[in-house]
Structures are given as structure tokens and as C-alpha cells.
Image (tube, rainbow, N blue to C red):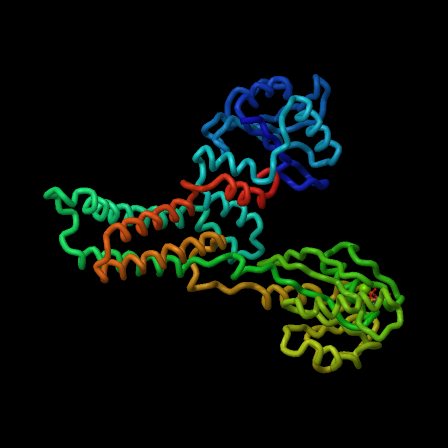
Length: 438
Ligand SMILES: Nc1nc2c(ncn2[C@@H]2O[C@H](COP(=O)(O)OP(=O)(O)OP(=O)(O)O)[C@@H](O)[C@H]2O)c(=O)[nH]1
Ligand SMILES: [Mg+2]
């Protein structure tokens, strides 16, 4: 396989950046790339990175000899200063040497193909990276830790034991060997396995169903300070602020990281009657977004507080918070508001963050053990219905061929979960959704 490289950290200015390289033969390049001799695998070397002898950066390097590496291949990692120019120089050197830029998920794909991780573990790595709440992360960790996979292997083993009996009985029917003493006993074993499998499948849930990154929208009348609040919550000037009502026209989105969750925060155009076509289009977007949001922060100030009832009616049953802004210039504290803030002076914002975190955090989910992919849920549901079918076939005294065929199908389906029998097409689909460098 080719030698691949990727920037494993975001392509943005930061304290350090990390490059990963993997592929047989990549370690031959170490002596050209670094000023010191790197002898021991898994040692953190502080050295200089060079381009044809010219200094690029002071870096740290660690190399791994396959198969004792994440991918199972020879590989190394470079920790350089996180400047964009440094990153682009390193990319230049790697390209010149003939390393290829990795595809999304290619490192994990290689780890899977080299039997370092199972398919469900590889998927869990990607899910853990994109988890947006602590609860989600801890459920995914159970899959990553191998607990989920050992349960699947355990069921596969039990299916194999049943298949030995059934297939033996079919193959040696003319001889004296007896594999199945009585069909009722076989039926009871299948029912027990089916019930156990059902309860396992019931403790698995798809991430898509349980955890959606919550959407929070800042909405309200024009000029009340929505964009100012948006910027203050994000601690950066993302949205334009001005004293002219109708400044924000389009929806602006950004991620907000709170203590327990990550959410998508949106800033919207102030809602009012207008003849301006563009502003009107922006207001229509605000209405649509309000409907799609998990929670709406309605922002008012002294000038606009009279429009509260219009927005209350608009929101109906939806979750919302009534926020009164600009308390630095007004002493008024009207009744009915949840919070009084000053977006300008950053007053009350910690309280707002806390409320958002509490209202949107996912509580511990007791009925759920494993957070898995939709494809796992579909496989489990097929295994369950086939096991039910096997039970009823045995009860109806149908041909053992039908029983054997369905037990084999269940076994093959479980093999697909951990990736023992998985088509190239499905692998491509799974790994292409990963980050580059993972
Ligand atoms: N004194 C004070 N002024 C504020 C505060 N928040 C916003 N403003 C001012 O109010 C004006 C409007 O602020 P924006 O954040 O643009 O308001 P907006 O609700 O996004 O307005 P539109 O996008 O036009 O709907 C600006 O002049 C801000 O400086 C605050 O907490 N205190
Ligand atoms: Mg605005």
C-alpha cells in the first residue's frame, strides 16, 4: 500500500499541529526529514525537520514499527508549531518525497484492514470524534472499548453451536449419528437465544435517533441586540452589529461549546413588517428557522418589549427563553422574563450558558447501553426476525434446511457488524464519512 500522510489537527493557527504518516517504507524517509538519528520506536524525539537540508521547524517526532502502530503499518507522527506556513511547508516536503495525501478515514480503514480494530470499533472512533455531548461520548466509548463487539462474538458463537447440531443432523441423516435428541430441545435453545438477543438489541440505539446536535436560534425584534448576544456568547465578532434596525439579513450559524454539550447557535434577522425585499426574505428565513430550532432565545430591549406577546404566540409549544437585553442602559426589569443581560458588557452571559447547558443536556439514558450506527440497528432487526422465524419453523416441524439456512444468515449478518464479511462498497461508504487524518 502507498505511503499516506495527513494533517491530524485542524488547518488553523494553533499552538501545535500534528501530521501522521503511514505505509510500508515510510521510515526510510526519517533520516532525510530530520536532523537527528531516530533509533527507538515509540520514543518522543525533539529534533529539526528539514527540506533538502534546509530548516523548516523544531519539531517532535515519534515513529512506530508495524504491526505495533494504529494502522498496523510502519508509521510516524510529527508535532510541529501550528502556523499555517509551517503546515504548508511540511505538506510540500511530503508531496516532494512522494507521500500521498490521505483520503478521509484512510488511517482507520488501514487499521481495520490490518486487523488492528474491528469495523464497529472504527465506526466508534469516528462517532466519538463527532459526539456532541458527554452522555453520547460515554455510550460510544463502550463500543470503542470492545464490550459491544464481544457481545456480538458471543452471539455468533452461540449461533455456531446451534448450526453444528442442525447441519450435522442434515448431513449425517443416513448414518447413526444423532445430533439433535429432540426438536423441542432445539426449539427451546433457539427461543432462549432469541430472547437474549432481543434484550441486547433493545439496549442498542442509533446515534441519529438519540443524539442530534441541538439547534438554538437567537430571534426577536430588530435592533434588540441579537447579533451582539450571538457574538458575546461565541466570544468573537461573527455577526455584524449596528445601530441600524434590520442589519442582519441572512441566517448565521456557529458552534457553541458548553460544559456538557456542543450546540449549533444561529443569529437571525429581526422580525418586523418591511417593504425591503431582501430584509423580507431574511425574515422568512427567521420564521422557518424558529420552527426548526430546539430552543429559541427571544431577545428584547426596552424599545421592543411590547412585542413579547407576538413572539410568544408564534412560538406556541416550542421551547424558548425570554431574554431582556441592554441592562447596562436601562433599570427596567419587566415581569415575565427569564433572564436580564447586557450583551455589550457581557453581563448575565454565564447564567445564560448554564441555562442552555441544563435545558439541552441529555440526561443519563438508563435503557440504553450502546450507541451504534443505523446499519447495526437494521442488522439486529433482521437477525431478530430470522430467529423468530427459526423458532416457528421448528415448532411447525418444517424442514431443517430452512432452519440451517436462517441460522447461517444470522451468523453472516453478525459478521457484517464487526466487519468480517463486508463489501468494498460498504467499507468505502463507512470510511468516507471520517475526518481526514483519522
Ligand atoms: N448599551 C447596549 N447596547 C447594546 C447591547 N446589545 C446591543 N446593543 C446595541 O444595539 C444595537 C443593535 O445591536 P445588534 O446586535 O446589531 O442588534 P440586532 O438585534 O442583531 O439587530 P438586527 O440584526 O438589525 O435585527 C447596536 O448599536 C448595539 O451596539 C447592550 O447590551 N447594551
Ligand atoms: Mg443582527
